[in-house]
Length: 240
Length: 204
Image (tube, rainbow over all chains, first blue to last red; front, side, top):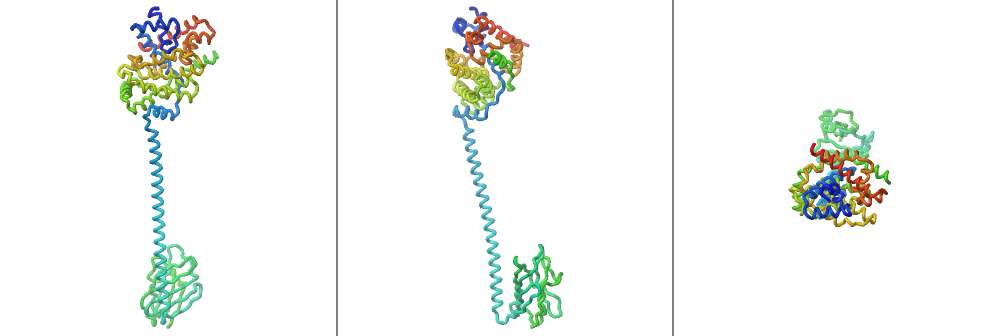
């Protein structure tokens, strides 16, 4: 067969599907280095490739890329993925530990504050006990609305213990006043009450018992006032 | 069966892939140098094309995945013989991919795999030299599709059977229940028409 006669068989030849006499002829031409047939084969391979690009487009699954790269032993992404996962896990653990640390710190701070408050309460109670334990301490009771007692000690000061105090609105506070006989009220300290309306408050320091007329308590803005701005909820006349 | 194949032939569609043929030379050099990133680039460039083509032949996505993997493994192992200056990566990969798919079809059908050695020889990278830069392009794929649609149903049928079912001309004659001579005439005339339309496109 001539090169020209073989021209139309090289596509099938290149596909590996030529058989019989045509294949033998094509093999013979190529084996002896026939340039025309080499060129025909080259063109046939090119045409075949174009035909093969015309398949309907189909998107391969993403895992295929991993498989392909892994199969030639160069897939680093899988490890990268694992390392990424490990890093993510570590990050989560670190964040969790960080949060735990934060929580612990917050708990510790809260505990410390509670301890300080309890210690403060205890100190004030011990002070109150010492106050009450002194023989010269004098006592006056009150029971209109808030109930309780006022204790006066000329060397130690004034202690008020009260229950049934009205709840304070936010931004308000109880303020104690010492009102001398025939004089203006003098500020004697700020205090708050517990949830049940119980409170005690001490004004430490010497007190001129002879001049003292009244111990009073008003509700004031939480910074305290220089002079009472509301009607006293407690007003205990003391005359010793 | 005939009508089904005919219908399959009519759904030719152009792959919307950009085939950057020119920088394939650089990619081929990196493949030869066993640059791992080159393999990833190769897959990103030709993986979808190979998968689409193989899927068309085997019509089973799990099998197609296996065969794509086999294709790229083979290309990786044989890249040493590829000539980056003169070689055409795309046509080579497509040929390797197509041969894996046809091999699979033949083994499933229990057909004689007489051409196995030939297939191996016919996908040697040295054969894919001195192609035009635009050997694979969307434009050429479009023109081929147009040329294909001008073929008569018998011609389309034999092209379909040759490329996507891997039948020899005598097998086509059996399948189509036509004389071998008639089948050969359809094959020759169909290929001639495609070839001419494509070369006209190149020279135009």
